[in-house]
Length: 259
Ligand code: SF4
Ligand code: SF4
Ligand SMILES: [Zn+2]
Image (cartoon, rainbow, N blue to C red; front, side, top):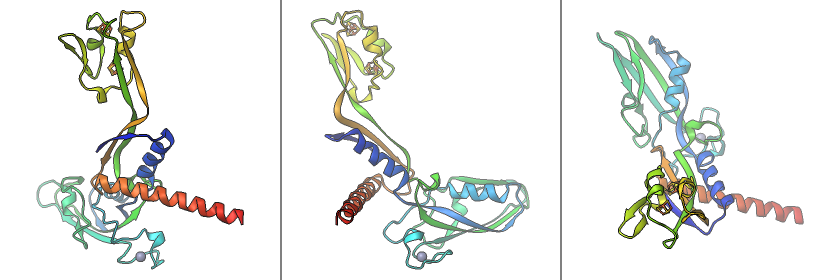
């Protein structure tokens, strides 16, 4: 999702970005009990790979383990989902994909069937049980619901038509092809793609340059890409909810201190 955000400070943008990366929870495999593994992949590597498979997350039905009323180290139906993997290679080598994982909850499954887990030689076997839990990215990257989350300032490009001689040097040098030649000089074609590199300004033969590139104050382009665990809309809403809660906690603390 690409958002255009106006009228906020850098601090707020960065807070939202950091909350999405490190505090919006999602599901990931957190514990693996290996019953049998005759493949050449070590148990630890296998467990690590399983942990990094993005799982569809249901934030409304599950609790974070630390907030679950069960208070159990093993977890309960409200804070843990069990998945099993039972595979055996026949006479040929085989690659095991995420589709082989069987979940006790049909809503909590890998987001893709095609994540390779392990390659096995003939007659090798793996049997294991895995437990997925909600967690946060600040503890481990496997609990990050976003694969990309970054913002940039909104570019503002101005061309001084009186000074510009339409030499085209700025068009050639622009790495993002933001500018194009038009009938009457230069036109801005894709302003949102501009990276604010200033190459077009530096190359302009006019003194002072006929092109000016700056950032629009308090305006940003926010790019958010989900791993598929949650929808981007939900990630944004959860992040804002968490931010609200932080303000509330802070205000409560001030009230207590002031008494
Ligand atoms: S600042 Fe860089 S990216 Fe933006 S228009 Fe100029 S050359 Fe292109
Ligand atoms: S480099 Fe300067 S003078 Fe040449 S087309 Fe671009 S803005 Fe105009
Ligand atoms: Zn529980």
